Length: 146
Ligand SMILES: [Zn+2]
Image 1 (tube, helix red, strand yellow):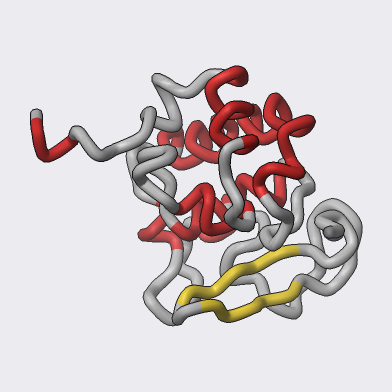
Image 2: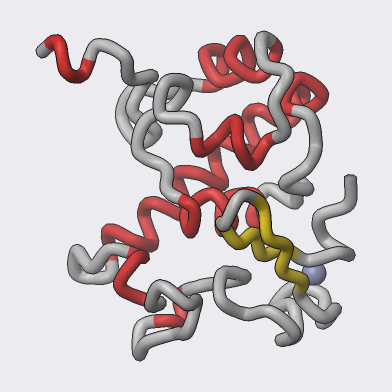
């Protein structure tokens, strides 16, 4: 399948801790863009990346190569996030929010995405949103320190 040749390992079935650690170590990108890059890891969109970084308690702007020691936690967080998405009767997380980040009825499954200025479910701090090349990043300033 030549059209798939440029893709990295699939986040749910092909990625393991040692592979993730090696990919992190080889990258100069911040974690957010690292995880969104389909050439490194396939299958993670913007919503999944925000949710997985929150679960792993990693700041989206942390350089990927400085997170190698957290590879196992990050992989667990990615899998937990994708499992939630799949268990929701196959509904994509994309369907939880519209393009403006407003939430639909399934939004209770989301921990940070679309929850700007709402309290963090883990610590109660007010959640933040930052905008980078037209894409929103949602995170907790207390749980996800740089
Ligand atoms: Zn928090």
